[in-house]
Image (tube, rainbow, N blue to C red; front, top):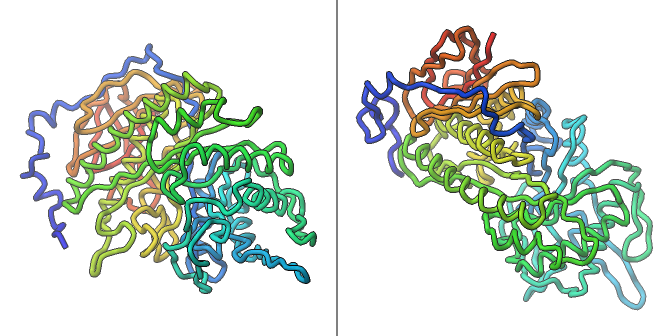
Length: 495
């Protein structure tokens, strides 16, 4: 294991340290007459279905309370393949022969987790994605035996690259029945037996599969075919539902162009939304090196976003965009947590800073929804991507940053031309609908910065930093300058 004892004191001698003269000259210049864009961007999150959210979990109540505190439009819910019994209501195939027909539909876990999610995300719209198709629908050498224990993480589910039914009726019928269970009160199964649920939910948005460029290694052409078949089947049972396509793990502009081209789809197929993901994955190094690498990766990602946006506007400008997985990974706590290692307090803060930085830049780019990933993670399932502490279910600084942005920004805000030294910190000024002037600040470095904000001679700053951790942000007065702690995210609001 690489030592990570280097912190603020040792950092002062590192290659990232600033000369004192530079640090004393830091300032923000704002042109209040130049509006970059009126924001249309929603800050939101995703929640992945996993065992800590089950009813028998000691952290469930706190976790759901944390979710409720940041629930926003376009909140994404994903039952995912490492938990097949939580994610696949028809985990075993139908049994059909000359004398017998039976099915194995079971919504015990799917209902509990989805209904809990919906109950704690009231009065907002949802993107639902039962992304995991039953393994038995895919061509494999031998049937796969999934673990019976719902708490077991199974990274080996999701086998095969071709569906056993090339007509796509089997997969489209599966999703039509799944939607019918939730929106029409029940469905008729493959044997003609009716299953009553009593659910009559409104499902506003449905996303088709997840990271199809990696899961099942689905080609662009094959994905388009699945998308067309599934959306048509779902629309028959839920006509008002809109659809989100792609959910790419990569930012492959060629795949985006291929998907958005209407000639690659059946006539009338809706292309409502596209989605894709980004995680900063720095190497095993010091805290400051990890943060610096992650901000550099974020800048590379923003270049990819610009390319995709140019393609979207040229091919299908009415299609909207949600970047519904944004996160970072501590290299010693990505999937697993190394022995005798604790994710540092600084990590949660600078990771939140990455989200704040990307939200700000993506709002200027006109992205519709920016979703932080993910509510609940724990050892074995991306603990450093979690927005809550897996031991308690209470918020980390990552969640508090999202909450701060939600409380301080709104659709319709005017984002103003803002100039600062982006190598050290990020600044974005905005003006709310009522005329209130605000300034988002993100410290990219592992040292305190003194920043002149002369447009804010009488203001209040709300700050998430290492001292606040997972607690609510602190406030302090601002009179023309602000002391921005290491990695801090702050919103300055004129009084």
